[in-house]
Image 1 (cartoon, rainbow, N blue to C red):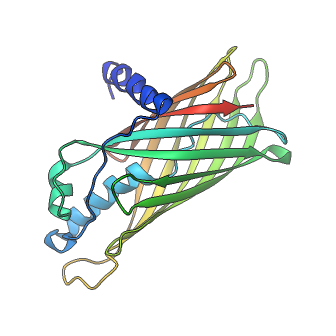
Image 2 (image 1 turned 135 degrees about the vertical axis):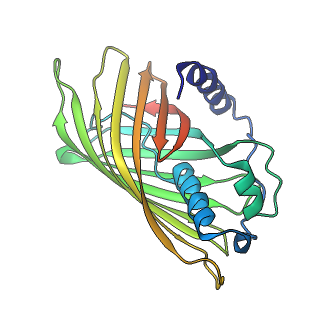
Length: 245
């Protein structure tokens, strides 16, 4: 991930969120999985997991009992265009998979937060539901960062010939500086991919991908969060706009 690319994509994603402009997404289901080898099926599944697994888009600081973080977000994940074409009846004209989401986090007592996202990908039958539980290991202070441990799960729905779900365990550290809160973290994403029907050449697979991410929350009453992550070999840029208190 280059700094130049990040500077180019993040403002675009933020603008799309702010004005509610529809963004192009894949328009076809994966009806040609039987044309793939097992190796390419795994690669497709890893690509989808990188795009669809839960993305927290927020710092490690606990929200507190009365705290709430709610917003809309969009992420852009690079894809193997030729692989997606072969796996579906579609004609993918972009190297990016764009996924919009509604995102809600609620603070709880004792340093716990709960979060959930819901996405209905335009022009497809695909929806994704996901959630997290987070615990503040260190509740930060004037000179110390906040550190949190997060467990999450996501489920892709709407594809009759393909089931995929992902669970992740991540650790995040953040430090607020006035209205800015930079954060960074790492974790492991474990996914289960199943063709969902009898295919002679494909079998279900379970795999893991390492994940690293960095982000920044800017809160001036209206919160904007920008994040870049690399899951396995695939990078995603995301942006979220909403309120956080």
